[in-house]
Image (cartoon, rainbow, N blue to C red):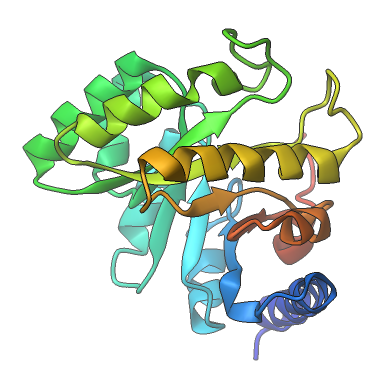
Length: 239
């Protein structure tokens, strides 16, 4: 086993222990929570090692990094999630490899994704990104739609050819009433998910929690956690 594979295997084992312990504490089954490894800034060789170690879900946040990496790993049994802010001029590229886009936050993006998904003859999973630091009708600092905008955007996704409404995503906010209150933030997301599922029963996915706060997300009821640093380590700054 190479040094890098040994390192990643050890890190994955630690994250797995954390998720399992969080599930036990919350009275949940381990299989209720899916680990997505965020591979941004790391090379395709790491993605290949992760696949060998059993990882099946990976995430990227920049198309210019993700597209060549996904192409280099096209032979692997992976599900690719796009989690970054997505500009409409990158939509055609992203639809070429992503299975799920977790950062849906405006109608123009939905329209563009639908057009490209139909053209590519693909079905694309979509999560509405919720900004818990935004007012009822604003957008958040890190993207996302305010809670008051979820229903309209979800309805548009559900009606759009080539798209599948899978659920909700959030990032723990750095400002506003939920700053520093990750458990409360993720609890709020779960309440919003319950509301969404009344109109869209199959939109059951709740993506929340990262390396620092995955336990709080699992406790709140998240179905997917997005972990990067805890698995891949802190990448040295360039220069």
